[in-house]
Image (tube, rainbow, N blue to C red; front, top):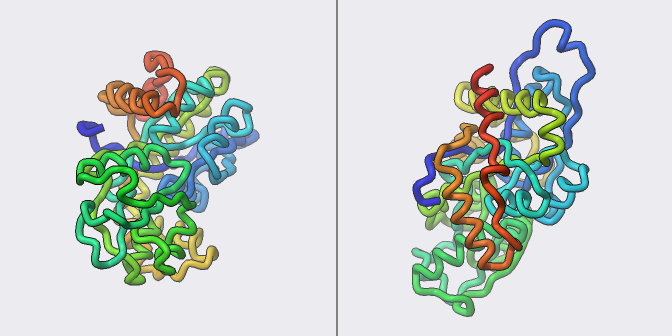
Length: 321
């Protein structure tokens, strides 16, 4: 959405719960997100104990595909899922999910990273571009940017790849360009493998959405509100304690084999601006993106946004924060 306000990224949770209520059995949630910046606030909240303060016990799952997110939500294997616009539209249309809250992209979370020597999007003619298979919204935006630069399909080679493997492919020089998120972009730049030529933020804020089924929402309204209050708390933590947050999330990536220095990681985290909300101009954006996905045959019908969008939960969370 070209006019969408700066929304926010990811996921979050926190704040204390008082008295006898804190002694009750914790509410268990299984939350699914895509690998990358979307799960950074989730992991920070879990590591820094914000879930427990809201009497929530959250298990975080990393989504292998968009289909798994939609099917798992519809089948009740996940109570809450977080995804990009194409996931949100599909979940509302296929899984009949309520979109209970929105958070958006940060000011650099999805970027076009290229081998040194490529100066602009127009220079991608004849190059090999890798994108993350599940994130159809990003791919559609990429096609739009390439088309605006005068490139059509066939002028470049597209390769689908998981974000975890993109840096290896870039290092091996088997690809020229990657569309990726932090902290992978910062790693590639720090290692001299690539340079940034554009930020998706300049084209679209690419909001991230939280969705839950109408049945879960109807039966667990207090849990939804508590979860969103935790989001609001972790957003404050990102702003007030950036170094502590970075250190907490750093421990998530280093065991995966990335040669990631604290300095590089903190640079990556500087692009992440967590600010959960439910912007008033969301519905036109959802409609616009749904029409694109319908044209591309990614969905069978456009959802009824008057039913799918639920700003009331965020309003309650903010009122009691």
